[in-house]
Length: 220
Image (cartoon, rainbow, N blue to C red; front, side, top):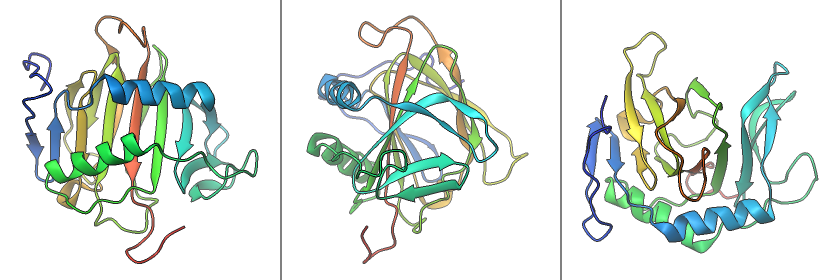
């Protein structure tokens, strides 16, 4: 298991840890201001459990911020400019979160990232996220930026095909993972939360995932 015993560096000593071709861990890169911004968003716009196209309610609660939001329901997986439940546009993505995603992508070797969607996943103590690919975007040349906040989680990394070997990385509060290039369509998921309760989020976890959805030159 990678990351379980890795020493945590102060925020003023940024480090990038390669986890394979195209994927990098930025340990502890998201400080308290990022957590505060995420908590303020969720307080104003509470997440909800969405339903898969097969009628199964997801164990993770979700909220979207930015011009586009990822949704799942009987109509399938997709991005939409408005919440299908309310018909209203998604709330704005705070600048502090947008800037963090851009800087994290650049630190991992992906300059010029322009996120259009911030999907916030809130995990309760028993929530899981099965192995999946992020493939609803039009441009696979853009990376995915994922930020872990709160209680630690076991992050499973696979290959591009089911059946490929997997490995597990422990993600701590403030860790960012950036994957693109040859890792852009890797299978990944959250096995479970682990370790002690977090002083702010308790036995839960928040994950921020930033994506560029449309192809270059297009916008929602």
